[in-house]
Image 1 (cartoon, helix red, strand yellow):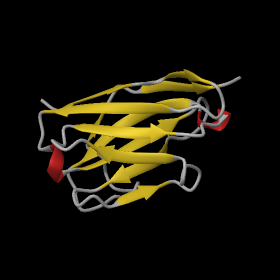
Image 2: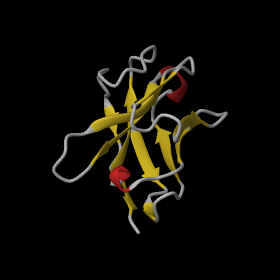
Image 3: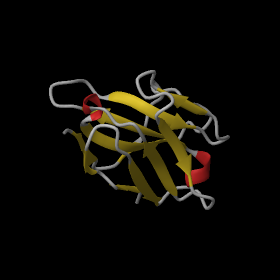
Image 4: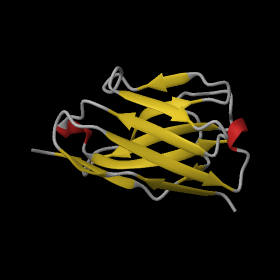
Length: 123
């Protein structure tokens, strides 16, 4: 049974940092593409960052230079380091996994999703 469990969300002031984690189980993590998506109230879900099985990465323009996606050495946990956070980064953040491990595009079909972790950026 595939499971993705996110953690690390919370409330932070503008300019602050958070690190999100996504623990994966029930699938061969290293052969999948992994990604972080987010959805703010009233908005469509959008891709934030993705990494394929070769380690290639892709970022939304809005987070380039501020967010970093990575995996641990054992490739069982996905991370999203978020720095210089802005109020517009406030959203529910979701971890996702795609069997199509060679693509880090947000348009790829992501087969598995976590339950999400809330990030709130406000003064």
